[in-house]
Length: 247
Image 1 (tube, helix red, strand yellow):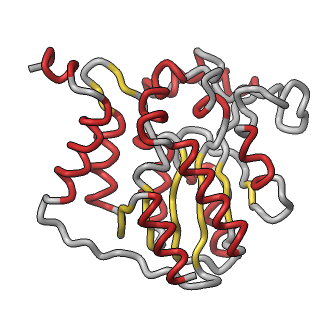
Image 2 (cartoon, one colour; image 1 turned 135 degrees about the horizontal axis):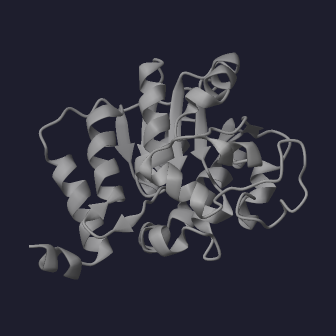
C-alpha cells in the first residue's frame, strides 16, 4: 500500500484529501463577509517557507508548487489592497536566546536545527534583508505599505505567543480569511485558536501548503482538520469571488 501511495502524484493526493472531506456529510456553515469586520490573516509569508532558496523548500516545495501557494497568497494581498481590506501578518522569528530552550517538539527541534527564521536579535535588522526570515520579495509592497499590521512573532505555531488576537480585537475584526504557511502547523494552529476565541474563520485551501515526508502528508492532515473545525474552507478562486460579491 505504501508503494502505491508513493507513486501517486502530489496533485492526486491533494484532490483526494479535499474530496474526502467535501463528501464527509459534514455541515458547511460558511462565513459571510462584512465590511469593517473582515480581515485577511497570513501566517509566515517568509522566504524559508516560500522561496526555492528557503531552508524548507525540499520539504514543502512540491506542495507549494502544486497548490500555486505563492501566487494565491499574492492574489489575496492584491485584492485586499484594491478593496482596502485589513491585512494582518503573523511572522515567525527566532533569536539567539530561543535556541537555548531546553525542550521542544519534533518539528520545532527541526526548525531550530536548520536555522529557520533566524534573526540576530529582536531590535536589529542586520542581515535580515533577503534572509530566510524576510518576506518573500513579491509580497513586500503589500506588507510594507504602511497599512498592514505585522504582529509580534509567534514562537511555536499558534497566536497564543503573539499579539495577533489583541490586534484583531482592537480593529473590530470578527471574521477571518486565513492563509499562509504551513498548513498543518502555524496555519492550522492559528485557525484552532481563532475558533476558540470566537472568530469566524474561512481557510483558503490552496493559499497554503505543507511538508511531504515518507508516510506523513502534512497538507492532507491539515485539510481534514480544517474541514472539521473551521467555519468554511474555500479555494482562492472561490474566496476572491466571494470578496468581490460581499466586500
